[in-house]
Length: 142
Image (cartoon, rainbow, N blue to C red; front, top):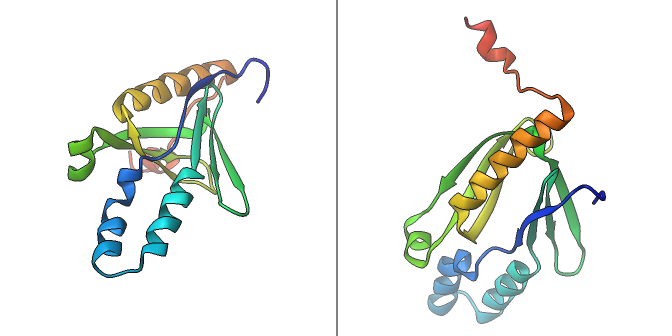
């Protein structure tokens, strides 16, 4: 992270994202699978900064993926029924990044507020870099 990059938000998915796997573990699948899901979720973190989004995951081996903020094209707030009951949600993003065309920040509190912070950071990053989004496919049809 560069010296002018500031962390806007940092967190992990809620264990509520494991609701259905945990239910299956009680009814069908052995308990070790539930324990594994719990540990894997605890080892999954998101970091949203003014310049990028970092996704870190892995229990034994670690993987970090980064998405530059100015590459985010659109962000949506999605709150499935179970998540709505417990006050968490998802931020789904369409991007212009070839390796990560669709990114979801899953199961976090105040996901709609996070979506708004991301969109503000996208505008600021584009202004800073002088970058504009251009959809060539849309322009070809007009």
